Image (cartoon, rainbow, N blue to C red; front, side, top):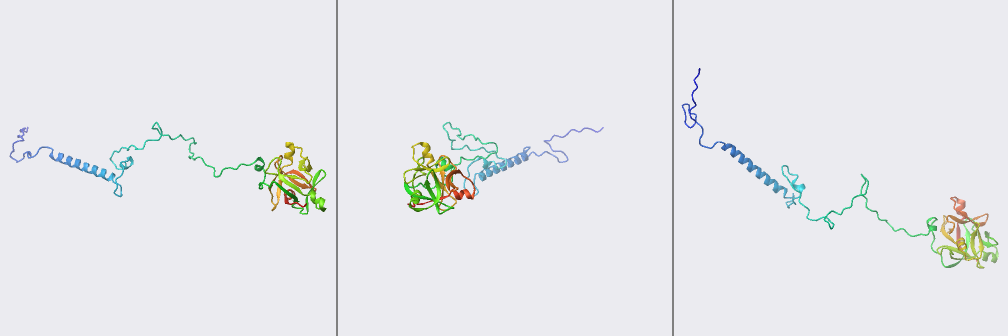
Length: 273
């Protein structure tokens, strides 16, 4: 059996020349490497902090959370805002949105122009003409029968040609402010009668002072498709205009036809008498 020789003491050299290195403490190389790594880590962190605190053009940057968050390995904290939220309690005053999910917020639109006030007749009829003078003597001439005029006689107003001085007087009317609407017209004959519609036929009658008579004798001038002509709309029958039919002036509902437009278009010319 081999003999177990005792190991010589480590603090004494032996014959083959081996002896432990007693010139330095054990683990010195590891401590040196650890120290160098610590120094390198500190230098890298300091460099990163300096770089993040400087803007690309050399100006200092604010220590915002999004600046430091872009550097790997660094923990950053958001800088609190210096401006407090609005409101007495210090809480945000933003109102919750009432829009549907997925719908964009749209501010309250302001009207481009202020809507103009208009009478019910103007809203449901063609373009209104300017306000007429207080008193004007007029004769009413047909568009499609330019040699014929309104002629008040008997129980109706006919569309007749002019025949002498008496015919001229009966075809001349005083145009005044409307009895029911001052922005519209009423027509008065030489003897003081008003032209009013009754049973949808235009006729001269004495003013009895009633509200019905005032509305029947008031007509509003509207735009016509014929140059220089107007259409006369009834106040109490919106959409009904005076027209001649079989050479009798009557009140009929508006129609989209060339015949109706021609029959209901008249030119208010200077009085014949």
